[in-house]
Amino acid sequence: MMLDAFLAGLFLGLLYLWGLWRTTRSIVSASHPVRLLLVSCVLRMLALLLGVYWIMGGSCQRLIACSAGIFLARIMAVKASGFHENSSKNYKP
View 1 (cartoon, rainbow, N blue to C red):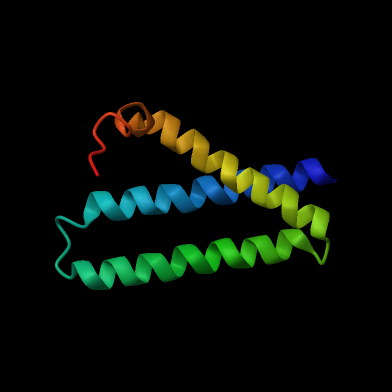
View 2: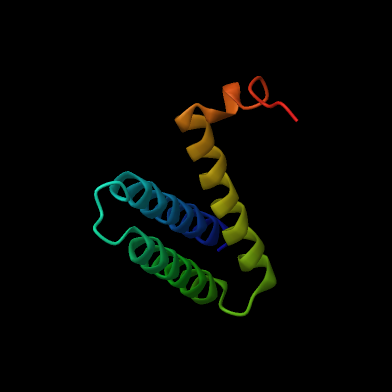
């Protein structure tokens, strides 16, 4: 029961991050970039929040499992992008 909540959270996280990636790729060629950013943000957040609410079903344990899946999706996306390797080397306060 917790595994399905975790996997659903992983899917929701990947879907959210895929939408973010698509938005950042298409913002350069958009005729109304601000509108694109706002609509994309609202749709991604709405899908994520409704998905988490539906998966959770009133159970705190399912909420935690779903959140863990979302966080794992973020970690996977950062590692796949390669930004984690150079982020501390280029940081200058």
